[in-house]
Amino acid sequence: MDRTDATLRELFAVQPPAGLDRRLRAALREEPRALDALIDRFHVEASERGIARLLYGRGRDVAAGRGRRHAEQARHELAEYLAGRRTFFTVPVDLAGVAAFQDQVLAEARRIPFGEVSSYAALARRIGHPRAARAVGNALGANPVPVLVPCHRVIRGDGTWGHYAFGPALKTRLLALERSTPLLVGSTSTRIVCRRGCRNEQRIGESRRVVFASVADAAGVGYRPCEVCRPRDDAACSCGNTARSCGDTAVSYGDTAALALLR
Ligand SMILES: [Zn+2]
Image 1: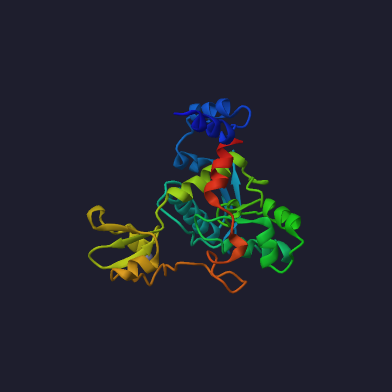
Image 2: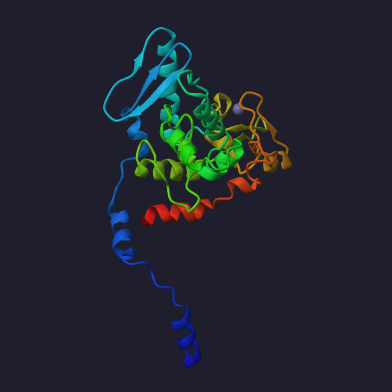
């Protein structure tokens, strides 16, 4: 290396933030339990109409009558989700006790596709209240059914996590889980592509499985979408664009995941 090289290297060297080493080592030392082992910490309150509350910590399920079936289904689907075997929930939620504004916010949060993130400000714009990012944050913070309504997919515009009812560590882990769970699985014998978690997908044998990144990719090699789980490439955004092409969802996920590790 000559002198110019050395000078250039010195000029453009990136200084790591203070304490980075220590934080990275601490993050690596932590050996968190597998996510699916956390299923026993989740509890639901179910009504006849569906899941009214999802709680994390000590406690037990509260359900009567038809609510018991919903509670059982929620537990089953949650266990699959935490194990990386499900990308969507079919158990009904009961948001009857929720006020109109919060209901609107939660409905919009449900449209954020598995594995993607959006920001509080983007959600505020999409429901037509562009200056209500803080109110949107509060509405999501009081989400009675986290995970099922994926408020963990909403982060702050600066890439930090913002408030999460079940704590920032779990938010990080849920987002990491969604990043590592394949979205679409096809069967080489039926040539049908499913969302992960569909009953048809769960029947595909290990040797007949093929993972796709998009429905378009699958269609390109002759696979058609399953009629039960109806996979689509993009959830439509209310701005008229698909979520992926909509500027409202332009938060870079890779950056935010890295930020979370370092905080
Ligand atoms: Zn399917």
